[in-house]
Length: 157
Image (tube, rainbow, N blue to C red; front, side, top):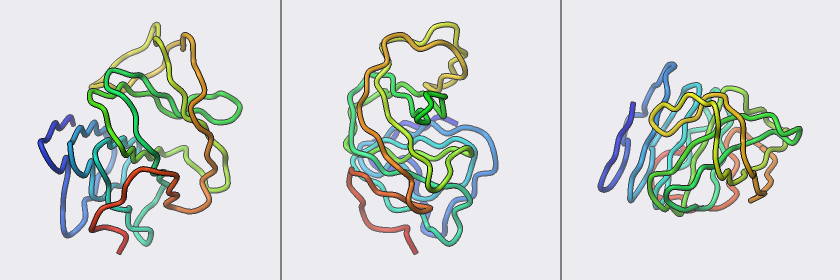
């Protein structure tokens, strides 16, 4: 699913259940309210904190980035977790993946180009990275780990 919104990209007061598939949310306000799925990338002005009691995979909240930039989350051994191209500049990134594990370190890198990849709504599946440059490292310390960005109202209940 791809959603481009003027304010909240995906919002629900009662929670959102996503079982499989891929989401690409682009929003000027909250990228996504709640999530439960395989790969989730939300970019926007802020996010609400995912609800820990119902989250099945860890999430990371990170600071912003630039439009038209390709970002990849890698494990410290440089194995890819997920790669996406942001359509807009953003101040908050909310990301989750079925391979995220609490206690494991990851890094967010900028990518100049991804060759030989399948691209689906801004998500890159497979391929080879060209010119990755380090951005930030983080270790998931809980089901929801905040490393930057802005947390707005809602969620976290």
